[in-house]
Image 1 (cartoon, rainbow, N blue to C red):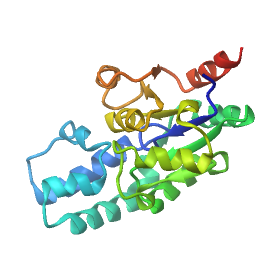
Image 2 (image 1 turned 180 degrees about the vertical axis):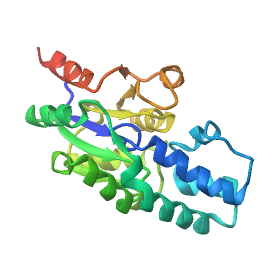
Image 3 (image 1 turned 90 degrees about the vertical axis):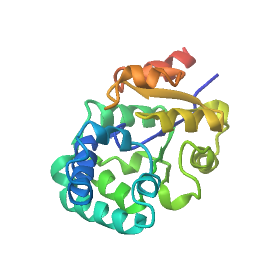
Length: 215
């Protein structure tokens, strides 16, 4: 089975936003729930959409909490995000091989644009599917299926790649192969428990997968 498309989660997969996310939640929680949450506790909020998180934690206050989160996150974004080794270089090589690529994220269009400006790789992606583009976020299959539609590829020709359970489950629910990334803040064992098709220990492992199919 030949891979024609790669679908990437964004936060924690292509750009290291983990510190930004954790610090933003800690800012929110220190104000709203003083002393109740630690940075380790915040790991479980990496992956779900902000709406899912605040619907659970602060029912009836979701929009207010999202606005506070986004305001602090935007103000501190550029100073707290960092890159991962060889991500952009690998994306460039995959693009040169003719692989179609898309972002499939629970992040808003505005948030993705801010992150893409740091990554400087927007020109390498054929489609971007974010929070604003779908009714249901991962692990619902809608975002993955929309990306496949935009790319014009069959589900058998694609891999969904991410750092969280939502990415693996969303890919499986859409009928595509999946790949976890070993640089996930939640760790390899956590991702392996969701049985992804592949586990990437380095971004360049994708090149071996794609090239291995055509050799």
